[in-house]
Length: 489
Image (cartoon, rainbow, N blue to C red; front, side):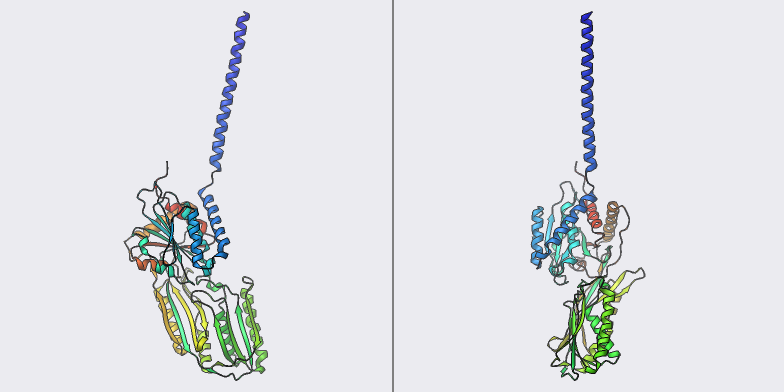
C-alpha cells in the first residue's frame, strides 16, 4: 500500500514537471512569435526609407556646396559618392557624370531605363533637389533592369552637357525620365523652345551739359534660372529702365552716363546700375521720384528678400554721356520691351516667358541679351516678331543668337511608346502616393529633352518637374516604376 502511494506521488510529480515544461515551451514560442511580430511591425515602409535616404542625400549635398566652386568639383563629388555606394561611374568629354547601375539578378528581360538631371556649379541651388532625387533612386532602386543615372553639366544656364552628351549611352528602347527643378510639380510631354535675342547698337557720346551726377543701383536681388518664378523677383535692369522712362514722361531732363546689369540671358539679373546727370535745379524733383520708386520696390519685395538694396548717391560728373539721340532710343526701348511671364493659358498654366538678362554699354556698344521660351510655337514666333519690330522703331539692331526647338514627346517616334510610359508612370505614382494628384501639363522652359531628342528621334522621354513639396513623391514613384522584375524569393 505504501508502495502504491509512493508511485502515485511520483506520477503526479512527473505530470507537474511535464505541465511546467509545456508551459515554458508555450511561453517561449509565444515570446518568439511576439518578437517576430514586433520585428515585422517595426520594419519601416518604403516611403519611410526613401524619405530618410532622400533627406540624408540632400543634406549632404547642401553641406558640400561650399566646396563646389567649379563643375569639376561637382563631378568629383558625384564620382566619390558613387564609389562609396559601389556604383560604377564615369565622366565624359562634356563634363557629364554617368552612373551605370547594374540590372538586378531577378530583373529578367526588363528594358533599360535612365534618369537625367543637371548641375551648374555657379547656380547649384537650382539643382540640389533634382540631384538628390536622382541619387536616391540610383541607390535604392530594386528589381530593375539596367539603369543609367546621368548628371548633365550646365554652364551659366546653357545646356552644354546635354549638347555634348553621347546619345549612344541610350538604346532606342530606353525609357528616360528627365528631372528638373520646377515652379510647379508636373510631368510633361512638351517642354519649351528657346530663343536668345541679342540687341546691339553702336553708341555715340558727348560731353555732359548738366551739372550734377547720381549713381542709381538696385542690387542683391535673387538671380533665378528663368522659369515660372520670374515674376516673384524684381528685374533690376527693367526697374531702372522704367525709372528712365518715368523721368522722360514727366519732363525731368537728364543725360545717361552708364547703364549695366546682369550676366546672362538665362538668369534674372541680381544687380543693375546706371549714372544719370541732371540740372542742379531739378535735384528735389529727382530725389522725390527716386524715393517713390524705392518705396514701391521695398513695399513689393523687401519682406521676401530683405537683402535687396535700392540706392542713389551723388557722384563725380562723368567725362562723357550718351548722345541725346541714343539716350532717347534706349529709354524708349527699355520702356517698351517686355520681361517676365508673357502668357498663360485658360487653365493658368504659363505658356511663354521672357527675361531681360543683361545690359551693357561697354566699349561704345550697347548690348542687351534677352531669352524667350514657350511651349507654343506661335507664341515664340510672336515674341520674337514683337521684339524685332520694337528694335526697328528704336533704331537698334536685332538678331536671334540661339534657337532651340520645342520638345514634343508624343511625336517623331514609334507610336504609343510615350503614352504607354506616361500611363505606367502615373500608375506607379498612384501606387506609391495613394492619390491621383500627378499633374500632366506642358512646361514652357527649355529642358535637356530638346537636345536628347535631337540626337535620337526614337527616344521615349518624360519630363518631371520636381518641387520641394513633391521630391519625395517623385523619388518613391520612380523606385516603384522601376520595380518591374520578379521579387526575390
